[in-house]
Length: 219
Image 1: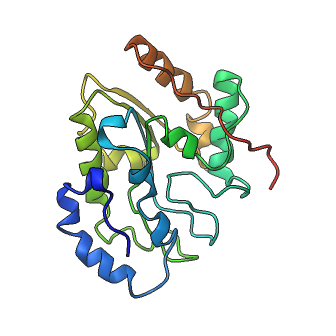
Image 2: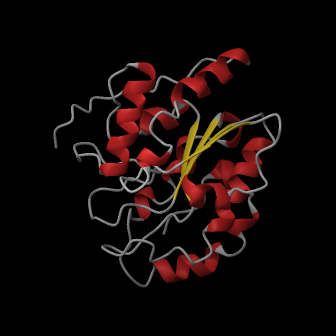
């Protein structure tokens, strides 16, 4: 069973409820598996977080999830929500879409965190009520203690999960979710990528290179 990433191990979550969640995870297979369970936190320390993008839970299809919200393993065709994210990216900043593996974003300070870090294979949302949600709020609060953040909150779930945390000094971009069911109700045309970069640049920080990777649109 994986250990808490050192940079985040001080969070109260790892005293409780993590021990109970860990015991439940040891009883049956789960995705993305122990090697990638804390991938989002391992990719970026609290002091390095600049942008927060919150997802719901890992993809339940074996071989897809890699522990980063909305991200898939290299070589996996992007699911529909991720494909819509790439469509908006191209419309927003005119750049080629990134690889379906969004590790390049995380390495630049984008915290790609799900509100539940595990899921049973083939059963979306199956671990949503296990107590994972406390981790997302505590992780974001720890990052906020270091600097102002840009919040990209897609859909009601993300907006509710982090309600009350964004401050006036933060950038908060809330829109519809990129799911095919809602993308045309306010996600398309929201231009989150250029707006985040404009905010970062105004603060004297380097923008995020959203175009890294090698996704070509083929599975």
